[in-house]
Length: 311
Image (cartoon, rainbow, N blue to C red; front, side, top):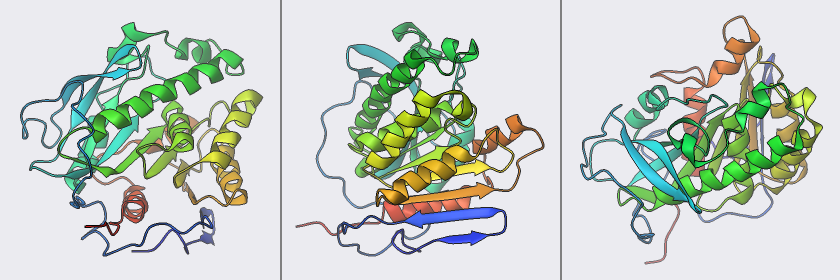
């Protein structure tokens, strides 16, 4: 397994960048048995009971989803939980949906992550999907053609509260290893992944697929806010996009912001996905064998590598 501390390459149209923070991390022990396999080191602390938890340990195996509720401050939000069979503890992914008013359950993501040993939680943020009644749908501003509205940036930052609440919910599940939780997001969800990395609590890594690709040129306030998040990130971030996305500058600029700040980051611009910008923007779709799969699994395995614990 390659380490985040020493990997970096540029090859043709495929750009890959990894930088490392100056502060040493905890002493690493043996790597996981395979990329993305369940990491079964004991979780520390119970974290208290979750807001709701399916009683069956097998009912959500594979791509069977359990719909659950969880608190985000005074709000009650909904989401979909997928898990591998067995008792765990398993590493976990909190997946952040995009700007769609009715996000999916995330089965395509589950088809990838669950067979690799991850619990997958797909929270629906306030105002969207099964959490529609919990707040204003911020995507109405975006779809009304006002991506530069300051209120949109403020609302995206507020939705990061929901992501962090989802991380806390997952960490409290008895079959999740709370020391091995990462967040992944696409488009608006990629923005949320980076904002969550800025906060860092309960996370070991973030993966940002095409965050702000559509809005980058039209929203100086958002560019400035994401640059701040990148410089302030507390966990490693992997920025991924297809070459034919609407704009690949978010990945290039934000990974460079992290590099300049001495923060661990990786960036890869993949070959085109389909032929249109929208097809390129949908590069984050998963299924069983996505083009980005091996690299994301490697990144997560590096970030989730077992650490030595005091007896």
